[in-house]
Image (tube, rainbow, N blue to C red; front, side, top):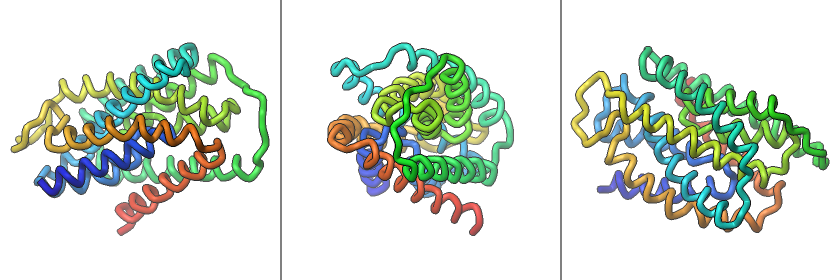
Length: 269
């Protein structure tokens, strides 16, 4: 009961931050879910797969709630979202099946990928904030496709939903305002997470799990997390609308820096 209550609170916090920043709940979930998995006795060999699967599921729920709000407010950017979503879905589904589920994808490899990604994002975001200039958008179908392919790879290999890469690439590479980038990110995150969740429901763990689960979606983990993010994500979006793009960037940096510290500690200690 205590574990579920803490997961619900983590879902509330993760959903709130996702609503403000547009990066999905993944950054919070990849820090919380492994702890919960250990506490209920999930074997070490399955920790990474269950972490990714349940992080993606919670991210999907959060993105669904956020997209509903965007559609009601007529702030859904269809063209950019469709291009990103299709390309992200292709790479994410292939890599999840080939690399994560059907091979020995270790916790060490997982943490190395996470740390390298976060260091790069922090560097690029800080560099953009130091310049503090307004640029004209430099959007093309090719750039959107490459961004989607990259985001899909990140979603499959880390469980972060792709927003961790979509927003920096839209904002730093294509010079799209971070608030618009958030809106585009939500649609892509939901599409990618939905497809990956279907794959995770279909595949089964290699060892017997003594808890209710549907493939790699574990009910004692997914239900309280999802309840939290569905409640808090729209509230986070509403609060985020009052913040400037610069303030959102600093919140984004604070969140990923904390996760980087945790993952680096796991990796080196």
